[in-house]
Image (cartoon, rainbow, N blue to C red; front, side):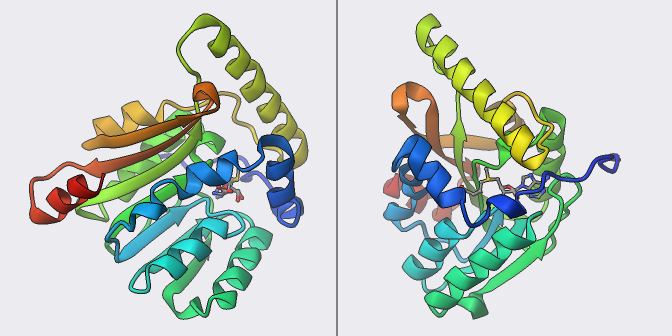
Length: 232
Ligand SMILES: C[S@@+](CC[C@H](N)C(=O)[O-])C[C@H]1O[C@@H](n2cnc3c(N)ncnc32)[C@H](O)[C@@H]1O
């Protein structure tokens, strides 16, 4: 039985109006390219859970590019969710969006999903919290469900790894000051997803491996997953 988190979740509210510009100033278009990497391939999703959605730039595009998809977006930040709702309204898709203000460390989804999306949000959690979150989410997933991930990573090679550790450490320090984020190191989400039955279908590294966009699936052998393999 998972224990309830003792601390408040980080407070991203003050960053909501700035987040997009902070990202562009620090990484240019690269985080956006990670986020949208697998969107371009029109994954055949009908019901998607977006965890740590943020200001809704990904979800807006998802709703726009896939007219059949229903999205449940979860975030601890009221201001981020308000920005998301505005973006969904701008593309006339509020009827296909449910927003939930929840702490991911205790969030238990209900419903049934064929896709999960975590863009730069698993890195806000401790490894044990990611493990528990994945365990709670996987119970609600259809066979062959997809999990789309964008994350920071530590690449192979001494010099690259040292540079990446310095950058990731600086980012954690900055987010601790700005939001109260307690996490200090990247969780090994890949090992966790693999333990829960996911296989990695594709991974696209950027910025020398500091960033990665990945597509995972809950391994089964039905027709749906076969069609996804063809796309990737
Ligand atoms: C770094 S931002 C990434 C946002 C978005 N996915 C993106 O790609 O821009 C992390 C998001 O996760 C949310 N978040 C972080 N920790 C959380 C927690 N424990 N519970 C709920 N939301 C959380 C923050 O409010 C924020 O919107």
